[in-house]
Image 1 (spheres, rainbow, N blue to C red):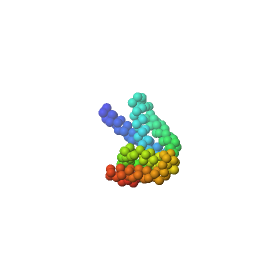
Image 2: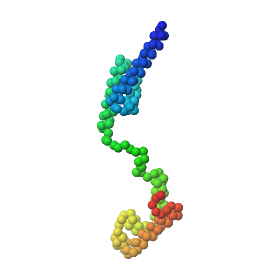
Image 3: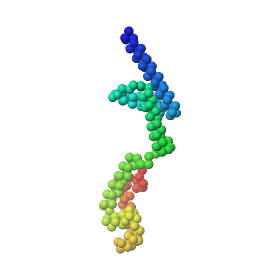
Image 4: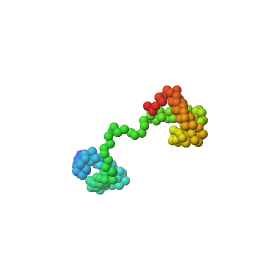
Length: 178
């Protein structure tokens, strides 16, 4: 008879477990109005029950589970209030950062241009860097280097031609990156 009593007790405990889970589910879903979130909270309740039982006993499992579920629902609403209202993010929003291929292309171009600048005649390089990178006016460059305005413009034109030729020698278009 002992075996029969044990089987009946296990079945009764399993039925109580199913009833408790259904009651918890109704309790949580009634507050959240979201079935998926409710299932997550019920699952988290059982995880916490399991963790708690590893170190201590629980006199009333039902009361413990409802208290934990209530606290998890409160935490859920607190997190929602703390979050700024944000629009749903679409999956197809483009990343503002360049793609990896573009980054590699830019780096390759920079290396080619730096190498071309290094072999450029020093006066041409200085005029070009002052004009294009520093944004110094042609008249100021001409006055600083004691040369004519036409000479400054010609140095800039030749420097650009040298840089384009360096890119084209490596098989890259001289315009913007691909």
